[in-house]
Length: 195
Image (cartoon, rainbow, N blue to C red; front, side, top):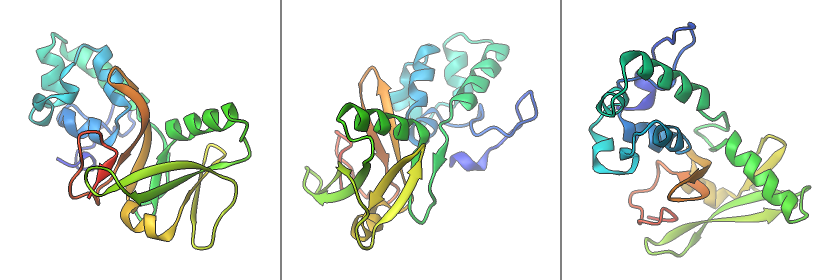
């Protein structure tokens, strides 16, 4: 079920991005950083096969949560949905990814630079994502600015990234930038290579 199909109101009247009838796998695919919230709530099936047939409500109830606790977890999940900038015609960058990029740039003495997001040949599936420091816009670049950080994508890369989302995930399985790309027909296990 696409995430946007089911929007309900929270107890405080706001529209929810995450509802109890959404599949765990769909939520984690759309918002990878929410895996940590679910793990902290005892839902450890975020990466297993159960995630693709079990709803948020079923997963939480199966781990002993009461209806009131499930509602509280939903509020927490919705409060934790990362803000993102961009569009389906370019790419989305989450605020979490932008803040991490900003920290990395500062750590390397390149606070005035931005980040280039590219698709280059390589990896086990044929194409792979690459991130690099960039200090200026090139001809044909699309520039997306989030949290005072500029992200650059060239025209050719953008054709393969259109509608993709760049997020930063820090979980038990590792930390790093993650691209969720609706254009990828096939991906490899590492998540860095696609076709």
